[in-house]
Amino acid sequence: MVFTPVLVMCGILVVITILLAVADKALVSYGECMVSIKDEHGEQQFKAKGGDTLLSALIANRVKISASCGGRGSCGYCKVQVSAGGGQILPTEEIFIGKEERKQGTRLACQVKVKEDIRLFIPDLLTSVKAMAKSGTFDTRLRWTFLRTDRPQIVPVPKKHPKLARSEQTVMESIVEKYAAERGAIMPVLQEINEKYKYLPAPVLKNVSRDMAIPLSEIYRIATFYNAFSLKPRGKYTIAVCTGTACHVKGAADILAAFEEQLGIKTGETTPERQFSLSAVRCIGCCGLAPVITVNEEVHGLMTMKKIPEIVEIYRGK
Image (cartoon, rainbow, N blue to C red; front, side, top):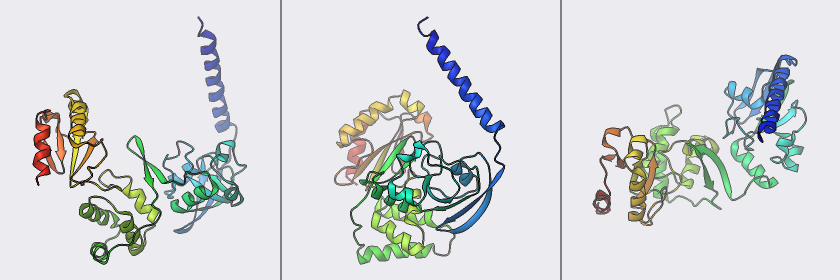
């Protein structure tokens, strides 16, 4: 067979990889190592198992680290400044680390292995991104990327946040004041802001960060994680087409395409007058009514192509 030599070589490589991994675990023992951390929240220490990646050790000890990949790849976000320990910079790190960052001891936590005591400083996400933009290892047209569902969301960087009008400032302050006594109240604050504006405006988030003494990077991390929030303006009515298994079988793709044609926008977009936004969702739990859509909180089941213009006209007149 033509493929036999290829299969044999692949088998040999797999065996060698397994043997090297076993050897690394069985023949080399680093014992326990002390990891000393300084970040925006203060200083702390903990013991880590030698041989693990630094990122794994940080996550295991509940240390907040800006890693959108969760340690599964070299994304360039899990940057830390190592002042002692860490070993040599690896080739897999060099592409993500600029000259100035290298002078500061910047490393990728997902690449560094804990083989000795390590002292490090963890900058916040915004500082990391600014450093990447300055060093040329990051596209300056972007702020950061988070993985939400199966696709990355890219957030554009505004040149300058416009100031809030006094009336808007008063509304925002009243929302923050309402939850001031509650611990970890950022979620209800964002929900009220999202309900008022139909999205989370950048200048409002900046003011929330200041008034609640929460890093802006932390607020953006929450805002980009939950599908209920949006950093782009949404319409008065959000039409969500279910694309779950039952709805897919009943023609959800055609329903979605018909709404795109009827509204003149693509999925994920908003009409110019901000009356409608169109989105696709995985499942809304109404499989018996498939195909199903929701318009804000209202459910419309057993959808047909004939019903689409009727529904659009109903909500267009509201």
